[in-house]
Amino acid sequence: MGFIPEWAIGGAVLIFAVAVAQIVVVKLRASVRKLPASDEEIGELRQALDAMQNRLGEVEERLDFAERLLAQSRGADRLGPPPR
Image 1 (tube, helix red, strand yellow):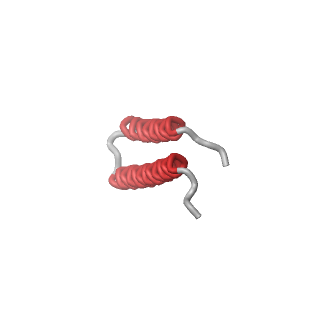
Image 2: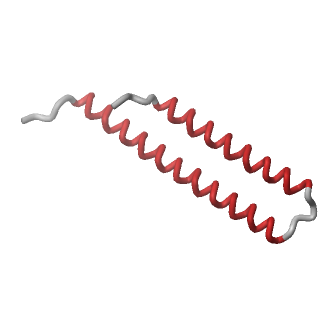
Image 3: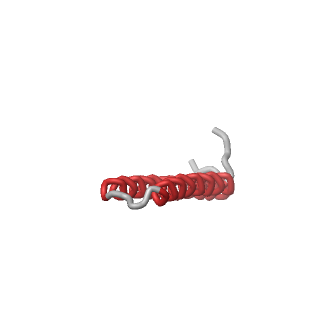
């Protein structure tokens, strides 16, 4: 299994967050141009934003999990093999 540096994982999360933000901005700009927006469109945008926030939360949880695993493996390497 390959080693993925922490900075690479953090960079991937940042890139993902920027991409999600760009999608939200594009959708918001498109909805602003069509003023007035209907309640249905506003509801759809809120649902899309909620879905993206949920996905970002899941990504943050996965990053935290990966960081904990990395910290555990580094700690185990420092301690050496367990006694028999």
